[in-house]
Length: 274
Image (cartoon, rainbow, N blue to C red):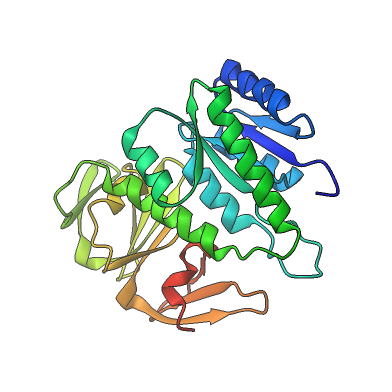
C-alpha cells in the first residue's frame, strides 16, 4: 500500500487488547492501530470515524457481539464506487475464545479469526493473509456482496446453534396492569426499541414486549416474518411494494399503511429480483 495500513481493535478485556496490539506491532511494524474499543457500539462509531483497513472484533462484547457490530457497520458503510474516493470495507478478523462451532463457521465462510490467548505463530498467519489481501485491493474496488454474504451466514450459524424453541402462536404483552394476548397471526411488524420490542398489529394497535427481538426471531417462521434490518421485522405478505432510490437504498411500503421502512444493506438480497 502507498500508505501504512491501519487497524481498529475492539476487545472488552483491556489486557487482551494490549497483548494483541503488542503482538501486531512486533509482527507488522508498519500497521497503525488508530483506535481501540471496549464494546460493539463504540467499535462501530470509531470504525466509521477512522475508516481503518482492518478490524479485529471480539466476538463477545458488552451490548453487541462482534458479529452484530460488523453487520451494523456493513450497513452504515458508505457506498464504494470507482473514482469516488470512498474507502473500501475493512478486512475482518474475529477474536474468539476456543469454540469449535464458531471456528467451523469462520472456516466455512473463509473469515479469519484469532484465538484467545493470542499465539504469535497463529497471528503471523493472519498478518500474512491480511497483507496479501490489502495488496490485491490496490488493483480494483472490492465488491461488498461477499462480505455481506459471509456476515449473513455467520449470523445464521449463530442462530442455528441456539437451543430449539417451540414456535410462537401467541404473544403476551403487559398493558398497564393487564396482560394482553396478541395472536402472532395478527402481527404486522416488530421493531426493536431499547430494551423492548414494539409489536404493531394489523388493526393498527401497538404493544410492548420485554423479550429481545433476537429471541423472538428464533420462534417465528422465517418464511412468514422477514428481517429487513437488525432491529426491524415485517410480515412478508403485508409488503405492497419496494422502491429503490438513486443511491440504491431500498424502502418498503406496507399494504394499507403509511409506514415506509428502510431495508438494510445486509437484507437487501431478499429483493434481489428488482
